[in-house]
Length: 189
Image (cartoon, rainbow, N blue to C red; front, side, top):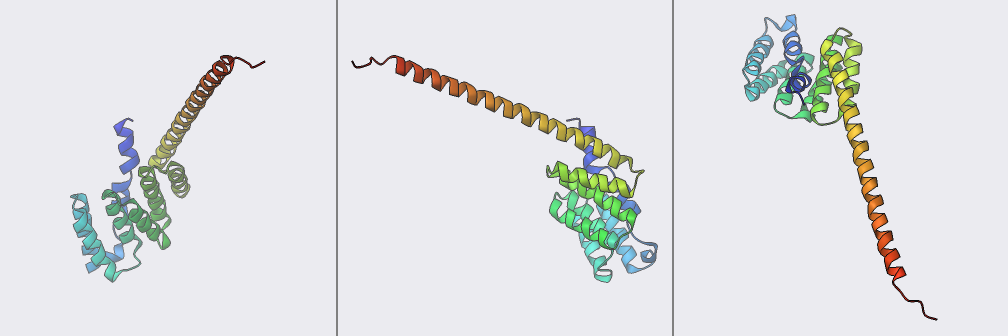
């Protein structure tokens, strides 16, 4: 697999989505905004545990913030905790804007893709594209995922055909052995 494409599936949109959803302007001057901003810096620096701590602290003051859930989802994704990432992205969609929904769906698609759930990932990419028709990354991921599914189906078909051929050859060998044994017997008169 070309690593450039793999990287695009895994991370495309995360920084854009992350930076554009980092906090609402209402949070900008509050303690919440400072905590989110600090969490964002830690996230950008790869300090995911510390970033998560800052987002958790901000969540105490704003427990239903879609932006905080979204950012937490990004952290979980980077940590390879895909189920937690999906849960956080889904929570961000409960009270989030259409923009957050689109980005969360895209990122859920990425988490599902990483888990090998290509059909489910494809559906989330399509939903993300419905909410944001200009999302070129979602368009790309749809095409890429469809190609991967076709490749897997083709490999599966080839494997099934090989297994059937092997089974048929084994059966023919068994039939030949059986025929040889039967023809080697002398009938009683």
